[in-house]
Image (cartoon, rainbow, N blue to C red; front, side, top):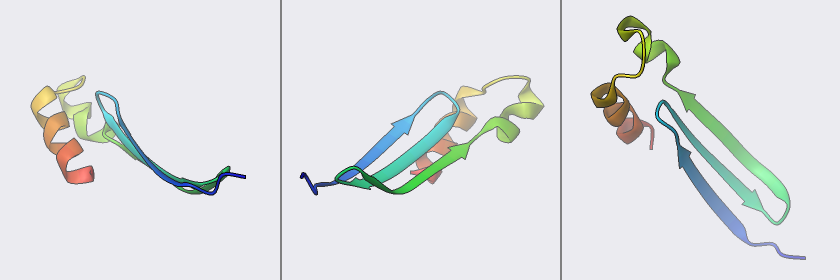
Length: 57
């Protein structure tokens, strides 16, 4: 059995996610959504998304 500790980080245009696994066990899984942050703009505002990704990571 593989007990490697793995950190996975993923970003989409408006979400930032991270997970930690050990072997086949998920130790942590977190998603930071930017949906409410972009609502005033009626869609994803790239400059705001870029800054939010930097802060969330």
